[in-house]
Image (tube, rainbow, N blue to C red; front, side, top):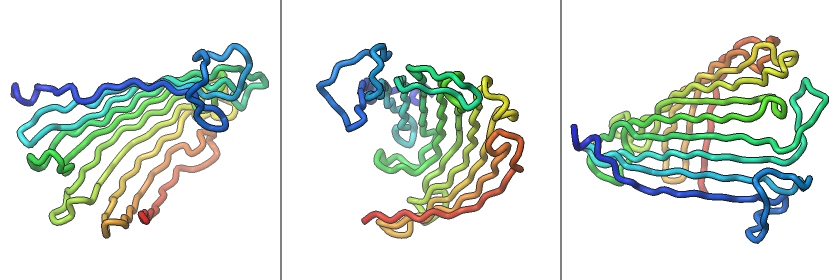
Length: 218
């Protein structure tokens, strides 16, 4: 058990970026909150770490991130006639491997979990909170080491200041998928989704959606 609790520091980083409407301008200087009325920049700050938890079958890789952003453009939710500058929000993402099939450090087969959360202001946005969580297993079936089976749940929460448009207050999705590797350059991924309260407006009915996606690398 002591071996399972030992954690390597992995990689820790911090990244700050101000993105100009015509691209990244590394020589520009500005404050995180816009006070001069310039709408040309989207300010981003992200920090994170990638620790490894030791296990009997090799290191369990993780990635944790936290970010802040500011959009200076005037915005307002769809029920409001007013607009406000400096739309500030934050997000966090967590990816953690829980179980490895074997001890090869470069073999990704095993079970992993993920979590995402984001928040922004209700006066400036229709969707103010979003979170999702789920599991993925790579190499679950014998002889299919590169295939991935995943299942996840996601929920978006609409602005409490826009209840006239979004009386249901939220939209939720459950999805399962299977990503099958056909060749080194081709993947096919069928999926099934169940969508509850689509649009959050109380008009649409819950829906079951099936689809398939193909990915080809040239």
